[in-house]
Amino acid sequence: MTMDYNFDEIIDRTHTNCIKYDGRQKFFGNANVMPLWVADMDFKTPDFIVDAVRQRAEHPVYGYTFRPESYSNAIVSWLKRRHDWSVKPEWISFSPGVVAGLTLAIKAFSDEGDGVIVQTPVYNPFFDAVKGTNRRMVENPLKLVDGRYTFDLEDLRGKIDARTRLLLLCNPQNPGGMVWTPDELLGLADICLQNKILIISDEIHSDLIYPGNKHTPMASLSEAIAANTVTCMAPSKTFNMAGLTTSFLVIPNKRHLVRYERELHVPHLHMGNLFGTVALEAAYNNGADWVDQLMIYLRDSFNELQKFVAQKMPKVKVMKPEGTYLIWLDFSAYGLNDDELNQRLIEYGVGLNRGIQFGKQGSGYMRLNMGCPRSVLMEALERIEKALGGL
Ligand SMILES: Cc1ncc(COP(=O)(O)O)c(C=O)c1O
Image (tube, rainbow, N blue to C red):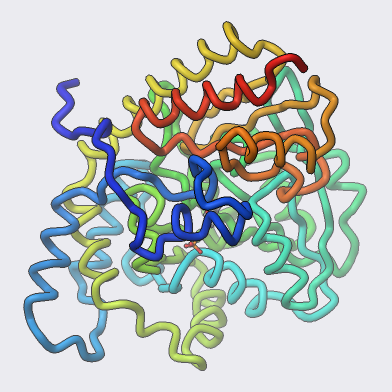
């Protein structure tokens, strides 16, 4: 594939109020670490999106707007082309961010005190979404098999009770990078159908899939599963536009859609963001080549990372991602506790996410975001090697 986009370009993001750079002092107590943490990328949001936003910005009235038919059609077409998933425009609803969508869905489809299944280690706002809505977290840890996580269905069966109402699925998985297979998903969906547990499937990373892997939307597996699944998606990770807070849900079950939209409409969250609407449409109508090239760049970066680790710090175990730009690194062989590990990396100038934040199974791990130019990644790896030197 010819590469038309330059992912090696270094863009100065400082002084834009971006969390990743301008939030370093607050998060790490150090404003100078190389920030390979919060999940956005250091690449330019592609020109076909910037141009569409700029064009709309030139009309000087930014009043209330609605999302036009062309917006839903862009989603329908993208899901068909990229994931071979046939979705009807009337199944699509809105949320101002995926976490907002899944939190509203928890409120719409369960009551206080009900059980919500969470498969750890996982993206930690899932915990807040469950606890903050006064639901009960039912923890179903993932199982490590040959260096890859998979579902522990036996553990899950043993934990379900009459008040277990929802399962929060992360597909692809953050932080492990698994792209769940149809068989894995079917096993999980069967248990949910048997026990009347609604699946809320966070598929925000579904476009970030490495060559040789394929994302399967949970709801694409059968009509019965589709009727029992609420899917949360967004162009935000894919095209690096999280600041536009524009996400969508696919809810084929009419009854569920009506209930979700009741939660959404009361606080007027359905209004959305004018620029996000324009950006989503531009992204999905024009973005296929850009994403394909991005994933080749990230795959090559991962290969370099893997080579570096094997040669220079072989005690670190690297989980091979099938999707996402997030790398799950196991540092437990060094015998440091989580604070010591984090502090040591900060001291040597690297800011990663602590594994423990994703659940107790993440102790000894760190999550590295490699959505950055390769030269930046390699320098960060050299700093990590120095931090671990002599241990
Ligand atoms: C699995 C997952 N869900 C949701 C989000 C955040 O989505 P949003 O910013 O749209 O709320 C992230 C960001 O890292 C994520 O990894």
